[in-house]
Length: 440
Image (tube, rainbow, N blue to C red; front, side):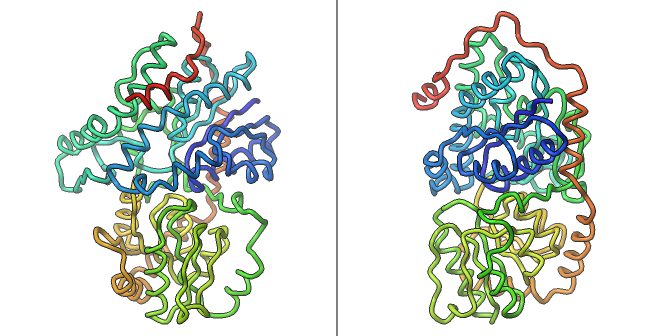
């Protein structure tokens, strides 16, 4: 079986697809991953063939842009840039398929795979790692800039959901997508967050206790647990010896991370390091950007560019983070109390769910300054209720092999009927999407 995986995003968005690719390869399938260039080494260590759909330079430019991490502005910028990946993912599928009908596995943002499936045929499995990828009237996600209190009537909830599409997402994403579709003689897309779901199979990779499946989700949806994938992302195998020595040298530290990219988060890390020093706690900072550690905290602070969260969070007193889905999932599995300071995108929804589950605190609007964070840490570290709920969610995460179940679903989809290629398909208009985006 030929499997072509397309994944767009940062570390927590891509590692689950490397894990799935490694499992499919272990089962004897031919697997190629198309993803941003920084993930090539991790993919090849896992035995996967690889094709970069975003260069390392482009990746750095996009994800280090501070405006990307502002709630509404960031969403508009991300969705406006989304069609820029159409050409490369479509070309990846067109070249690799070579007349065959492969199984395409696509992350939420890899919409080029959805387009290639429609035009070139084969099979398609769409994999959503976050509840925000689904629209529902019944248990709405918290969208940045579009609050949806749980007491709102369902009709108003739906209007908010559609309003986000009409005002933020579709006006910036659809013009370029539909320009390409028009050249391919395909119907126009009216709602991106409806169209990006595969008509064959949609997989929700988060457990029901985090977000239960809803009656108005696509009928072809299935739901598994969080994927365990952090071990696939390390620059080296296991924990760095210097970090291991730090963990062994004292009490469990507070782990602090605001994501895997080099964003402008210096003030956030500085506040966290000083807050830990204020309450007498050791601190492990995971940041690819430089972090200034004050002299008074130097002996109790360790800074590393990366560490596999699955290996370090089991030895952590608590986790301070941005609310990325991969980071949040690992904290649940480790039973670590969480303090979430969301920056953009689905992070606000994840923060709300952490607080709702009683597994930590959501630091809402306002600057993340040291006194505020120190007070939150004191609560998270001393609350018997938070400790109890963290232990319960950690137990709920045990024994689940969501990656294996995802691979079972991919194999089952491949055994079903394939979509036929579109007859008399016009040539793909390479360059049109970018032209349309930059001309808009």
